[in-house]
Image (cartoon, rainbow, N blue to C red; front, side):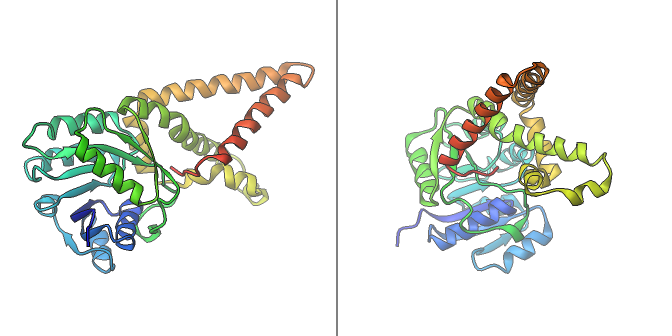
Length: 292
């Protein structure tokens, strides 16, 4: 039987890493899936699953014989790991990641994995996250019907073909752009929504606690992603700070537009604002359902 890869290594087995292991097992994409995690308890949990072949105590040991490596840890941990692994990986090894930011990660990939005698790194960002985190919430179907953004830049054609085939085999739709464009896009469509949900909940936390007992589904729906891991999102905001600040500035303009509409005596401007918002939300329903 032809596998996508013989020896796949997942570095970081949280929600995305664990889901990748499950999905590869379910779709028979790898002869062996191995794991390294900085967390001893996560390594122990992976050892008990049916999708994990070997659990390693160090990333260097895990990657020595790998032909496909996926970085699944927080975005700020990926470049240091690349530096450690560059001397270890085989020249025919393909590496990618699932990080929510790309410019710094891809720059590190170019630095540590460039040259004909080195492995190849190509950035990936599956838009398939959740407000839940950790291995217990992993699921094999997490990626189905979602979009994966690839940031190949000047990647060699054959490794890029392989990476495209991998994410497609998981049921994902592909979108490709440069790392800097990726960061501008996700600052608006992913990082800003999380910040707004967090700001909403932070604001409400300063009001009487019993108010939340009156909340309906509207508050729960609009604030769901604020339950995401603070450590993970703090790293994302910092890594993509420039584009993220631009998205906040754009949103302040939208708030100013809403306040200006309220200042007018009639409702025409207010209705135009709300209609524009409703139309965009309806169009969003017609596209892919992506969580991040």
